[in-house]
Image (cartoon, rainbow, N blue to C red; front, side, top):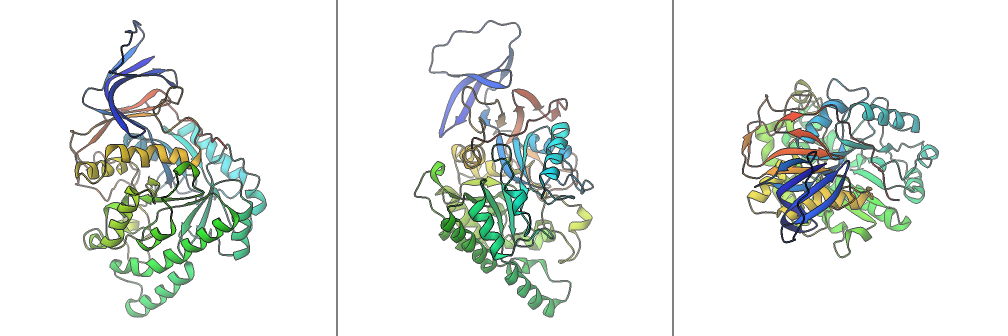
Length: 448
């Protein structure tokens, strides 16, 4: 048994001083310091003193690309899950655009097997939709898989779903949550032609948000929301990037009752198009980072609950790949180690409360995906827990970046908060920059 003492526990909108008792994989007792409690005398009880630190539920990241199988020169399940737990992420949901793609149940289950052998964090994997695998998609068990991923924009090669009949079939028949990448490919291709005529192959990176434009995002998201309303689909829109899209989402009902939910990623909250001048293609993402107006509108929508979840879209590429010219440089970047520290910077700047960060990164993913007994500090729940020192500054540099690709868009940035301990299923996997690599995460289960 373990006992975390003297912690500032952040959970379900409240922060209070208390202790948490861990018995095996689960939280067995939460003790507020306002309570009179009996001291547990047990020579086998391991005490972790959290004085001066926050204790939060483990972050659940509902959108990552860990590149295994097939692209392991960039990243793999072991390396990226290790970076994740160092960043306070105890559970992740990974995308289907690997090699081979997770567009059959056989390929999907092969990834689960890899994760059971390699992942330091808990895991689930999306089933990938294509224009012609609807029969296979309908065989997926909703209790064992996080969701269906639909690329409504050719962000990742040949997984574009652009057949209107296929989209209607998916939205009308899926028993699972449908998560979408939302950009209208037709608009993007027209914009590419226009900019190629002017600049050839070497388009300046500052035009990325004009090529993958506000219009391209809005038109696709509007279609998805319309289909979801028509067929009462459980829809989750990933990595929203524009102010205009916010008009499509509702904050008038509780999250648990929403059929249509929305996500924002840390890079769309942190960067804007002024950062292209310094960082160039290192911050080339799809959808594109856009204007300060868009960034500020996304943050406001997060605070007013039009945006439900904060995630990463962690998608590493090698540095030499990212430093190529505009069309050759792939989109995506590594984020899981730094996403919680990024959000805590906003806390230090008094833009968001600790309680709201925990709501959007821990509680809300659990509610949106019906994750079984995770995402909250509750008795009987899995002991996925994180200790954070909000007065421990550290600078990102090559020596402490854990991504296999070896770089970060936050390199040289001084973060003011540090994750010091990460528990996964009651086991201390990460403590003060050291890892217990004998611990492996578990497959997520879903209450559906």
